[in-house]
Image 1 (cartoon, rainbow, N blue to C red):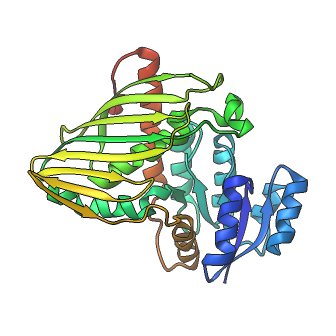
Image 2 (cartoon, helix red, strand yellow; image 1 turned 120 degrees about the vertical axis):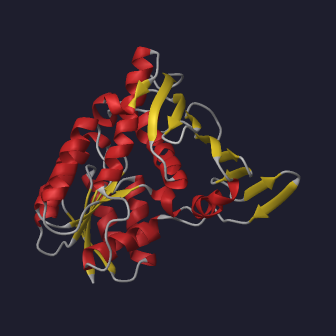
Length: 323
């Protein structure tokens, strides 16, 4: 039995906790930490574990084998470094860190640390639609254009309106999903990004992100994050020499179009990804698996975050090699 400690048991952390209790055999939560002590203690009673006010104490606890960090980005580096110093298995919510400099330092710490390598919770890698799209990708021939968009309603979380806590907005909090999904589906790396961003309804950080990018095989990529209106959509499209793919990873389903032939593939986007991610943490902590999304994958994503912010400031393209 792998004994889990969770740091950051707010809305998203609580989802992890409930899946751990119901859906992941061989994983048992023994402790949780939340800034709101009243809510944290109530959740601990509900789940039959103890409440820890101090995240450092939770990390050091002898009965904690693995740690999930599900806090705002500004705290990720310090907490992740402490977990790796303790030699314990770590599932670190995306974004891996708040800044590129922190990501580079964390890769070094993770490489040198004892115990299993950390896992970055790029949960879309377990989305059934994205997984099927990746399987179908070779049927497209030479892919020349990829388009990915994630449109969400504005967040009601106060910390996402506090730059000192969130560090960034739509690029850092949601764009990381887009960057990682494109890399996962295509198997290619980004070479350049030309990005723009706006604050439409969130006064602290950007709630709209639009970019054009290039991959190392010359393909173009269009990326969009919208978090300012009453909308919810998650779309992935690809155009290749042998056909096109249209995937909806919010509501499900894929269409593969080759000339006038249209094939429809059923894929349930509503299937929760968190149980599968927690299973990876359990297996990594046991020594039965290695990290499916290691720190260096998180670093690649943070390079694209930094390139996007630089490009928006400069109002022009940024080469990834120049970071």
